[in-house]
Image 1 (cartoon, rainbow, N blue to C red):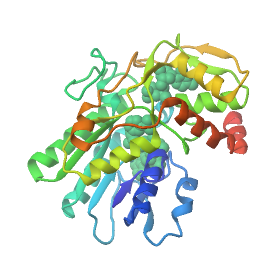
Image 2 (spheres, protein in one colour):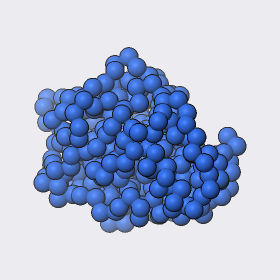
Image 3 (cartoon, rainbow, N blue to C red):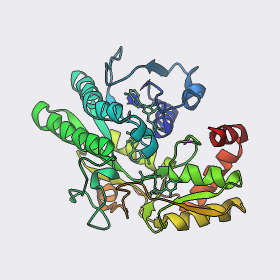
Image 4 (cartoon, helix red, strand yellow):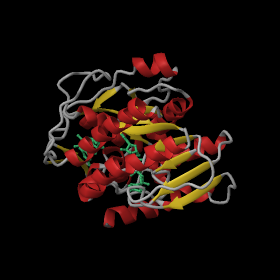
Length: 316
Ligand code: NAD
Ligand code: UDP
């Protein structure tokens, strides 16, 4: 198996799950937003190979490949807003390089797409038949449109080249190995709560998201890799929370006395988001199992065991 972006948050959990079941794994990553510490424990495993490269420039793997999971892309809004051209490049050239690799090896290809293809949705909750509501020239478009293009390219390889492709649309996912300073809401709130720093709620906090624990999400990607399903298939946990509810839950679970501070809402921030996951249940036999309190508790424990990383993130 080849995993692009295998040094990132989701990618490293995917590599770990594949190694655990006995697969050979090649991880391709340039560590632009990933952390080498995520995959350091696998480096001594003969079944694991690390290739440090920018997959937008080239993507070569020695030996045979039976599946390609394409996860390489910045994913956190501050990350992709800081790397707009790189984000568009990895969604276009990077995706084409990954598709070519799969086509050369007659391998299964799975694209890690996103709920962001639905933009600021006018349909709620979102199922896979919804075409989305994306501002093509707004700041988030570098990510949203890159992923929409990735989906189109993936579909074109399926139709015109006969490549065995699949698309998963991943909704907000959280858990251990998120970077403490990656700016996503769960990592931000947990780090702030543990450090007794104010929780930074953007806007009035009434916007919603649906948060999936990483182990559940990775189980869904593995199911898609093992299947011939073309998708798109939503993967996410349909339990929807406002951002303010999430802040209060994190304060409860950490026992933190930190206050909540309101900041301005980022441009084009989606107002609501909740997946319909009937397709994943029917076609992949997948559904999430870890509830938000349990998943957040595991995430808090992980961050709490890294006080130095938290201090470094807060001083950055
Ligand atoms: P992440 O930033 O932790 O991981 C992305 C990885 O890709 C990093 O290790 C980074 O170094 C690598 N990468 C980026 N550009 C690269 C390039 N040009 N060449 C090689 N490697 C490159 O993010 P994540 O949360 O693990 O997201 C992984 C994938 O899942 C992304 O494609 C993202 O769009 C998708 N996704 C994630 C979420 C989520 O909530 N985590 C939601 C929707 C979609
Ligand atoms: N958010 C927030 N405070 C933060 C980080 C994010 O209130 O410190 C909000 C953000 O505006 C959005 C939601 O939380 O409404 C989810 O943001 P995230 O960046 O995690 O993911 P995405 O916007 O891609 O869904």
